[in-house]
Image 1 (tube, rainbow over the protein chains, first blue to last red):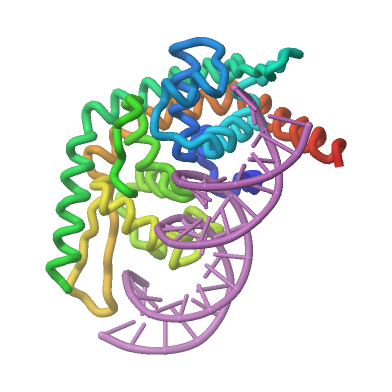
Image 2 (cartoon, rainbow over the protein chains, first blue to last red):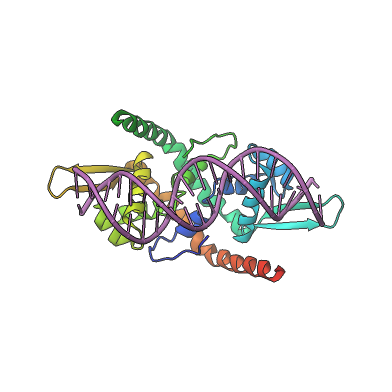
Length: 123
Length: 123
DNA sequence: CCGCATCCGAGACGATACTG
DNA sequence: CAGTATCGTCTCGGATGCGG
């Protein structure tokens, strides 16, 4: 998050930076599909993510204005997270990314295998 | 690059993972605009990237099948890098990301400022 | 129940110097 | 000129335990 230097003029970089971390896009996607959710529910829907890491992701998304944090004055404490307009709008480019992955995902995996083989051949 | 576990079903994750690192998307973009380039030329066009880091990025992109590496038997050594079909196809989602950034970039930066302020207020 | 503090390992980035 | 090696720093991911 060291605030982008746009010396290299790639407009899309801000968007990628915002979703660069492992779980951020998954959280956005999950919130988009299910509406406002509590951390507990988010963890359950996503699966395979620790509480701390989810919290880290939520903080990042909040700091980038992609989600809002609602706190209810109750006991036990209750919180939920919801997408902002900017967050919801991200679904459009995310869909484009998904289509690319659907079309070229196998190629990528195959290339990774080939590359791993070549490196083990040399040694 | 620890090979995705698709336990969390977000199809777009592969695409994000492929461009998750700082310079990867910039390199793809630069190659798309200028055609095949030698590392030297790439560095010059991009600006602000060290030789090692560019090399790291090129290796990653190659291992993911987004670029190809052409070696010419000359002296002094000559190499150039070119986008594959999968690499060129990435420009479509990248453009979508760019449009999002153009529309919501300011909101993101403003949110970051607000978030930074709140944290410094508390301390 | 939510979130924070701590500790650890893995990678990326960055600068520099060196080999083919 | 291309690429590697090394070193230091930073951040993410992951696990665990504590406090509000």
